[in-house]
Length: 44
Image (tube, rainbow, N blue to C red):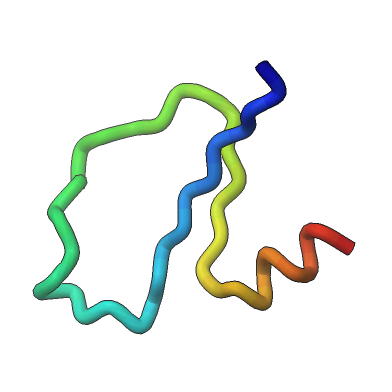
């Protein structure tokens, strides 16, 4: 289908607001971004 997953890990969100996902692993290719600047850099 031409879709590619993106994991956006926003560092500005306090840890107390994040869901605890320890122990989970992602077993497929994906793009890991931590800022919108990262996305802009990847699109160039």
